[in-house]
Amino acid sequence: MRAREYGVLFALALIWGISFLFIKIAVEDVSPATLVFGRLTLSVLTLALIAACRPALAAGWRRYLGYGLLIGTINNAIPFLLISWGETRIASGVASILNASTPLFTVVLAQFWIGSAHESLTLRRSTGVLIGFLGVAVLIGPAAFNLGGGSMAQTLGELAVLIAAAAYAVGALMSKRYAGSAPLAAPLTMQAGALLVVTPVALLWDPPTHLPSLATFACIVELGVMGTALAYLLYFWLIHHVGPTRTALVTYLLPCTALLWGMIFLGERVSWNSFAGLLLVLLGTMITNGTLNTQFARVRQLVRVTPQPVAVSVVALHDDSETDRLPEHSRITK
Image (cartoon, rainbow, N blue to C red; front, top):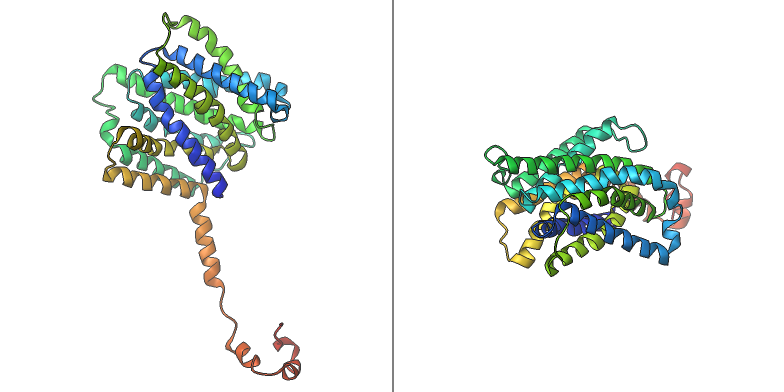
């Protein structure tokens, strides 16, 4: 991964990191299905508007309509609904931690995946993923999970987010089929398909009986335009350039960005375990995507470069005529 890929990765982490906060605020006013319906509607409208202005960005989108319905269900409708419902029972920070298990599912599934998304489960990748997940645990602290002592409602909420993480992993691997397509083809067909699936669910699952508050409406707009339309453009760009496994590493950074948003908007203090967890997360990310191996290889290459023999400096003392009289194998190219 180069600097450009890292820039997109961190931008995506910032956008999705704050999405958990907006989901938590919105589901206190509207049902999870209503929230997801509004989010997908705004996202599809945003992408369609961009496609209308720049048709080349969505060229060939009709070829993916059927596939978009399938992958949109797995990668958008199911996880969006599960996470939104889960956040009615658990804190947004806990949801972001559990969502960080996506790379674990992705790496394991990629080992058995048939097709271009197949990636062997090497020791390096396994180690990097485990270190990253350890960093997430250290960053928040084990008490945040409370898997044993929580209520049944809380446990079900945590389970819902874990299933959503597994769905994201499958969706990331399936998204490889969009390789080579126009930038808007994948997110537009996926989210249009997901919207078709979610619409009847929203009509049946506690439809709204009142207008949402201004804060709720603002959250839905942000989730639709920034957290879905723009974010998925960045998401598919990363999949095309670095693969689904490395793209899934963005979920490791979400708790880190959640800390950043908390510092900016809530004035929250960052403890020592937060910094330790952040370092572990970044270390796991670099191990998994091979950045550390690349840097070590460069250092080894520099060490292997040795200076010219001392005889070179001796030859340099001779004039050109003397140099020309040297044997062929001893001449220095100037």
